[in-house]
Length: 270
Image (tube, rainbow, N blue to C red; front, side, top):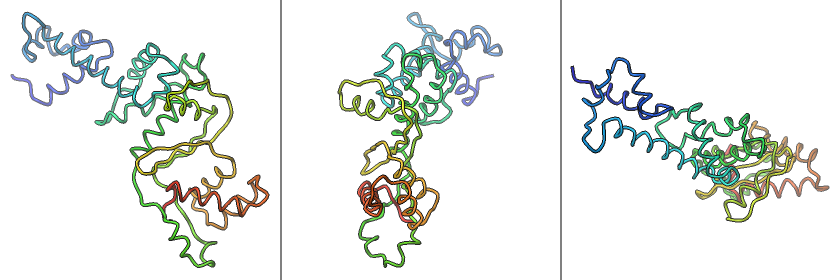
């Protein structure tokens, strides 16, 4: 009985994604039979059916590896090509792709690196990968119209205290143990990079005009943005800034933060 299309697709997927190659994958297909692949995939004197499927298996791995190189250029720069190749090999065994889009392939790489032996020589590597992955997610994240400064200028003074804002839905705030922003920026700009220094830091990653930006946050701004995310009123955010900002003039500090958030297109209407 001829194999059905869906069965054929599932079989080829299993063979192409077999961790140790098509031959081992084929051996596991007990119901298929020893020579059954030849009846499904046309071979010839130059190349057997198994060898032809093996080409697709290699393409599958190298396409994902190359996509991860594009998404994690700083991780690649730190680890080197050979280590990165081996990292991807182990990573795909642990986290095989489950989504149609290749953009999801690196979703768990930072998590995978948390306990990886490569951290012995680069203890900051998981945080670096987390920042690079966040940059991809922010670029691909949902869109929303930012608040225009004129909208806020039009508010009556008595309406400001109860006003609520929202952070752009694509933006992220990362909590990291290593200061990796400068390392990533150096790689992106083609400059010599230095290993990241240890130090707790919160990093804002956001998108403006189809470009992704990131910067380390001081405590007052990080607390203020987290308050915005919680749905705090503008009056509550101002009180928080007054209590945490190092600036002796908290009102001026709040004005600077708000102006920067508006310029960065970080805020959307509440």
